[in-house]
Picture 1 (tube, helix red, strand yellow):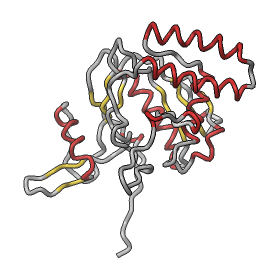
Picture 2 (spheres, rainbow, N blue to C red; picture 1 turned 135 degrees about the vertical axis):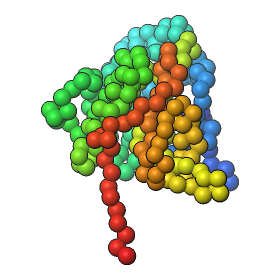
Picture 3 (tube, one colour; picture 1 turned 120 degrees about the vertical axis):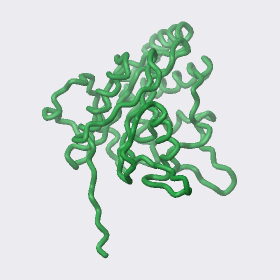
Picture 4 (cartoon, rainbow, N blue to C red; picture 1 turned 30 degrees about the horizontal axis):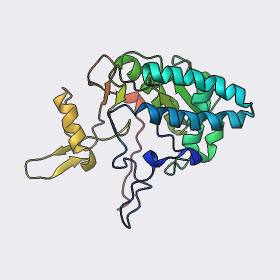
Amino acid sequence: MTLSMGRLRDISLAPVCPGQICLGSVMAIPGRGTSEPRPLEQVLGQARKLLEQYYATLKQGSDSFDDRFKQVELEVCTTGTYILTKSELLFGAKLAWRNSARCIGRIQWNKLHVCADIDLHLGLVSYSYLLFDCRHVTTCQEMFDALCTHIQFSTNNGNIRSAITVFPPRTSSRSDFRVWNPQLLSYAGYKNADGSIIGDPINVEFTEVCTKLGWQGEGTQWDILPLILSSATEGPKYYELPTELVLQVHLTHPS
């Protein structure tokens, strides 16, 4: 999740728009992705900006901010990162959603709620906009289970609901918890010897990655790609999504 929060924007998050080309609507902006931990100065600077706005919203005094920022400084200097409280996490997620230029549903940003129990009975959920706090997960299997819950909640038999799932943060002392897929649900793309492509052309390269990890598609236009996940202690693994979780709309051209 990129925290592009209005006044919290800094040069490291500025749009990369060369010349006359605007990349504001591009999902994967060049130069944004990195596998390297941020410098401590940058982490602390962004943490200060976030917490300043958070405590201003709460209308709490400077003493509360000072006490909390001292805790954050200690954590960052010790571990390279810091753990957001649930309230801070929700605040940051709301602002990130509010400022997400591509999202057609961001008008609902202030209705987001935290759901910490990944094993919740989905039929009892009363909120339509949930943040699943999954910072406790330790394995790829737990990540996959969390993402299945995310998909089931969001697709909701066609009555789409907005959700975000948060996994453990990046630190310098371990590998990342990472979802390799650009999107949770997407179709495979296969390149034939003659250069023609079956399926989704944009996913040809990622389909090859899945194949190298052992996944075997059926070679059709509509093969759903597996999720490729890695954790702090596990390299990339593929997980096939249950058929019942994949909501597809069958379209037929009138002619």
